[in-house]
Image (cartoon, rainbow over all chains, first blue to last red; front, side, top):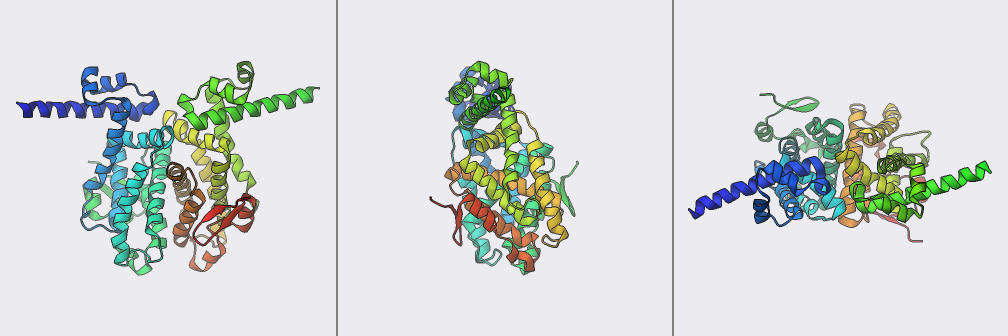
Length: 225
Length: 225
């Protein structure tokens, strides 16, 4: 009985987060109202307040969720440069397919960058990238002269802007292709020449299979079922 | 007499834009009110409405101003790869020193990317970069295999995110250093090896002199008076 109640509570909580994601993705933190959240979630205001104390609490929960993307990457147990490449495609896929990821990233950019600047999400991604690049450099896949923390900081900043630009210019339709470009332009400057063939800017075969991506020489497309 | 009136009108108009920049930089488009603008501008609401019909008209004027940055770059008459490098440092300097540039970029990101998506500012910068990279590629400074439109799109996206990340993490204190990183990581992948020594990731001497930048091997600092 207690278990069934707990499960119902979790379903309600997830419905609220789905509703909040729709509202934040569409209107942003400032303009989204708790009435919007309740409407899209299909719950009562009482249920909403039982689970979340404020609009900010909803926003923080959604922003924290983005890091679950990195859990889906194959071979994260043996991380390396290809893991970082795959992570960028995973995140791109999340932005294209999940309103919860889209809401999280809009919140990080609007609420977490301007309204209430908080470096935590950026620093968490920088640490994740660093954790993959360190073993990569140790095994000779990344040039020994490079500062990996600076490289990780560059990657997170660059990805952040590339997805904004792709969102505005193409509704994120070209996002995977823009990420392939990032890696094509960048890899020769960070990988020893003889190691370059080991890395695929379009994502590893396992990553592409998981995300349903097909590749052509110049671009990546989402496979049509 | 008419001329004096015209000059007074222009001074008032600039005061309004200064006040609007302070309000938008601090509160964002959604939260900034015309009362904030009037307060920071030191003008009457009547004067404000004489010059600008709406908050959106103010925002659009400020967003358009960002392109004036490219007018200050030396040697724009003979553009090339170094011109693009210098432009990124000019823009970084503008973000650090001018509330009007800061307001413009916050508006582009918040208002122009989410509230009312408009690719124009991004496309204008992409075209500017392309216009510099085309002659660079023609004279052999950029690898002939590269698609310059894709490269320009990458640069604009990457810069956009790097400045957001630098803003959140360091109040833009490390922005010039992060841009030096961008070019250090990128140049080997886009420039033939024998041409690399021709380009300075920290900006040309003329650019650094104009912006008052001093360089150390690993970073760029703003010279202290």
